[in-house]
Image: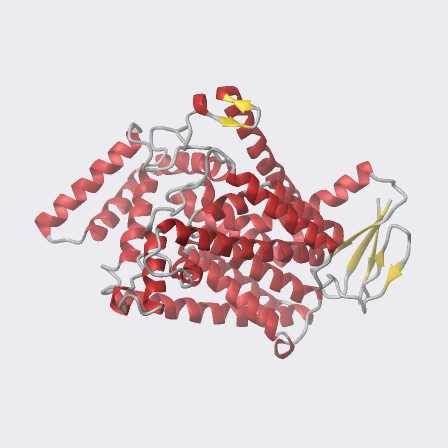
Length: 485
């Protein structure tokens, strides 16, 4: 297979052999028929998930729902602002407070949930269109359409949209900054002429981190990439360095300001609710898969799990000690966590390996295998076949992403927006508490990498070998690879 690299000009070979020049955009801007078909399929997927015999809890764990509801009532003047409180991440509360604000005070929780579901549906439509555009910037029209198809075939964006969870807004944040970065890479320009891309990149990073604070590693990663480009790059790489560093700096300022505001409202660093929740998650992680390796059920829905029982006893022990000594529970937890980590490195590594699997394999926990039913799938065998199908597609995405990383190993930093969210979330959760839904915001990158790797592979094997395929390279501006047999 021969590759023809054309620098400083974009020349796209169509199946008919015609060419277009660099004056044409790397991705079209308007909604077209393909977008409409994609959105109709997304709506059909929402309907399909609605008839499933299982779904996430509508109101999640109630924390974001209750806080967003109070904020919405305060906005409408139906509750005092003094009752507004954010115990965990701020973005989910703000995100759900917007649709909640149109609900009449005194409405039941189902009404609030329906408003949030419609809100999630709207933003998932926007996200799906932006995923397609991102794929077009990354590798051309075929990659863009394949990315949307992969997203629909793995309907986690729909499944998790049925619950009041942090994952949907975090996913949206990732889509925003991925689109902004790939769009800018397709046509690099000075920061003064990149205001919209700068805004979306910094906003997307901020939304992602403030929705899932454990993803803060993405800011460090982006900062290192930007600094590397600025200090060691030449020409357009330095331009990219300034663009990325400016966006990261804006995101850091926003995240820092919001975080300091929450800390001050909750009484200081040592006693605030965010710190307490963080220590609880890390403590859970010290017990998850400690001795029971293959129970992937989510906590606390595992009362008979030995590891969960030990975790519960340890929590009670800290409560009693705190009452007796006056030492805050989070402080006691941190002391024990650090000591346990240093004393049992083997347990840490073994549990991390199991957590890596748990993060990538989804299971239905709300139904017993014997009671499972979906379409023609019934009972234990239906339960098994359903999960094989759902998780097989995740394996395809992971394999495609790995092929992409291997194929671009020499320029892998150019694609940090694709693998960075996955890395940030994975590093945190293999060391703490792990559930499959926590990796959902990392799926846009996996879908795009898998599409960019598999489209040329599939084309070479199943289409006429006389037809060239266009695979654009966002590594440097105005560069396109036209691959011909």
